[in-house]
Image 1 (tube, rainbow, N blue to C red):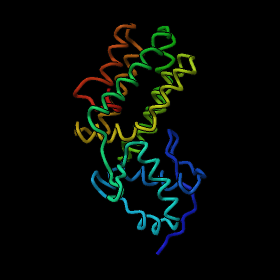
Image 2: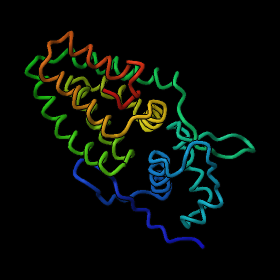
Image 3: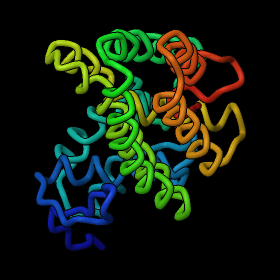
Image 4: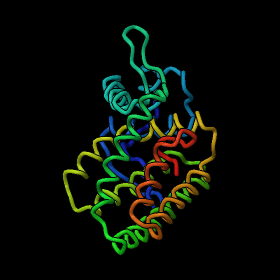
Length: 230
C-alpha cells in the first residue's frame, strides 16, 4: 500500500534537524541517499522502481529522477535491463577525488596568514561540534554534510570564488567517497572526528609547510579513509 509522502525531509546540520521543503524527486533522493550512506541499504542491494514508487506513493518517473541523482553521486549503478544496484566508489576513483580536493584546499591555504589560519580553525571547530554529534548517532549522512561544511570553510577563506566553485563541483561525490573509504579502512565515525580535530589543530598551531603536510596526509595517506580522514 502506498504511503503518504509530503515531500519534506529533515536536513541534518550543525544545529540539528531542520524541516526542508523539497520537490518529490529531491525528497526521494534525500531519503535513499541517507539509507545508502548509513548502510541501511548495503552495497550490492537492488533498488526496485516499482517497490520504491509504492513505498513513497509517487510515480516511477519520480523514482527514476531520484536514481539519476544517486547515479551522478556514484552511490548506485544503473545498468540496462539489470536495473539499479547500490555500489561503492573504487579505490582509484576515491584517490582521484581526494587529490583534487587536497589540491584546491592547499591553494586556498597558501593565501592565509597565521592569524587567518587561527581564525579559520576557530570556525572549523564550531562545525566539528555538529560532526561529533552525527558520529555519536551513527549518522554518516550527517557526517558527510558536516565534512562538506567544514572543508568549505577552507576554500572560502581564500576569498577566490572560482576556487570555491571548482571545489564545490566535487561535493556530489563526497558521500560515496566517505562510505566506500570507511568500509575499506574499517574505522569508526569517532575516529573520523578525531582526525578532523587533529587537522584543525595543525591549522591553528603549525607553520605553513607543516600545515600543507597535514592537509596532504588528511587526504592522501594510504591508511586514511579518503574524504573523512585526518
